[in-house]
Amino acid sequence: MNQPVCALFEPCTLRSRTARNRVVVSPMSQYSAKEGLANDWHFVHLGKFALGGAGIVFTEATAVEARARRTHGDLGIWTDAHVPPLERIANFVRSHGALAGIQLSHCGRKGAEQRVWEGKGPLGSPDAARGEGPWPLVAPSALPVGPGFVVPEALNEAGIARIKDAFRAAAKRAAGAGFDIAEIYGGHGFLIHQFLSPLSNRRQDAYGGSLENRMRFALEVTDAIREAWPDDRPLFFRCSATDWAEGGWTLDDTVELARALKTRGVDALVCSSGGMTGPVSLMTIPQGPGYQVPFAERVRKESGIATVAVGLIREARQAEAILSEGRADLVALARELLFDPNWPLHAAAELGIDPDFELWPKPYGWWLARRAKTLALQNRKTKPEKK
Image (cartoon, rainbow, N blue to C red; front, side, top):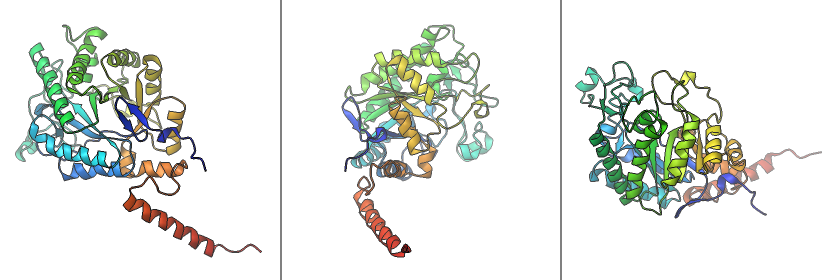
């Protein structure tokens, strides 16, 4: 019998790397690192997605400087000591058929924050008492992310240069750790997005004002990373396609950014949205199944760059439709994979790609196929005969 045609499980080749399918594991912060070092939690957290059949597995936002973290629990790659535990993860992910991706980030003003389950507010005296106090932050302008948060230092050109160097050094370490794909975190109110959005960038120099100037930092960081990142490995850029706020970053701006990033060696744009804390909250964003897919669709059509759709993609047939209709090149899932780490394998069965558990790791698939046959036999025996 011929296998059904299925866009979700069509391999995707970017430069020298080929993902076995179009399912991407989005970066998901675990707030579980100490001094930025990956540990067994991160190994199991990311490793299970490779076992579960994903095509690409990304680390959470991985800070390029100590001050680039959002919380004390964030992953980091600002020293050589961070490389070995990350390399262990990358090797395991790759050995089980997925591509290993790393997201390189700098939170800018959106740092010195409590973990989400501790309140997600600014770090204060109780946090400092247990050894987790705030630290100095930087941003394009001296505007805090919200009331009570650290007021960041506005970066001068020397400071901007140092951060570009930090991204370059982090990309070099990530390549040495064996990651297949690097992703630049340019959205959700982090430093690069802070330069892009007029809501957080009030500069009057070459890095502020016009769209061209506000894009300058993002493009220079991209150039710095592309210099250090091997030419045969793909580079992604995650953006917030819109701020969802009057006077903020828009989808039109994102299309222009995508065109510029493509000329600088970016292979795919991950089209998320929001994250610019202030006049915007999740309550003001019209969320629904696939609500950000139109962003990926328009950017793909108008810029010619490959796109990754993300945001409330939960069902196999929903993901299949997004791809088969040409609205994006890959789909990224996050919380749905926390709920079901084997989502890609279950999707393959639902779409008729893997009825016999052949895509599962052999120590699982052999038993599950045997179990399915046993259950089928039992059902036939217990089925009442027709008179």
